[in-house]
Length: 278
Image 1: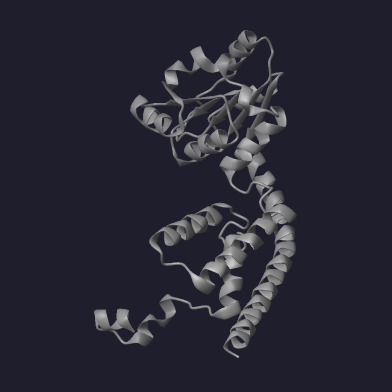
Image 2 (image 1 turned 120 degrees about the horizontal axis):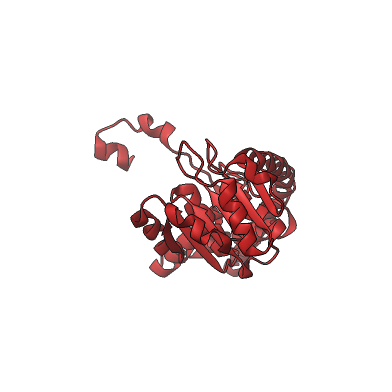
């Protein structure tokens, strides 16, 4: 009503712009959102972190207390239980995250490895952040312009180089993930062969996320090279989405248990206030 009055509108014109949940419906909605069941990407964990951040800010501002404060405690408990007892977040469903998870099949402990990321766009940035979360030892970012590579490198604690420097540094890379807008391959079979010789046949894991391809297909014919393309990642993602759907059914059961607990505790609190008043 206030918003409509402020803009000189009929309040009915705004009804399609918002939704309002009350009581146990509100608690259920919060639990679904916190558990990643209401996200565009099913099981996506970032929204839980955003909710906890908003909760912390509200506590600091002194605007969250009483029943709403208790509700959030129950919501967080349900979300943590969903993460612990179901596989809702175990399977990557983004190209960037799937690439990093695949690399862990080859290198179990990334804390000893170096990654060369080719390109400096959004996908490469996400890959770099996921690698950092997994404790990768060192990241090198190669790009056509050093300025953009350095900008991203500063953000993810990495080293920046030019595309032309790749042949000199390729042998250092255990993991190579490429995503540029180039119309021609930026990494050929010859350069990879030379790097393998310098590496004394230590394996290299490569993911070509670009369309058209950044890495020559012949690179995949080399021994000690594990080359995946964006099509391989899509197969992984589709399979993982199906797994998440199954986990989501289990998660919804846990949410309903959480809602039942919420309702029971509200009834107990209402009864307690009556007893105190009596």
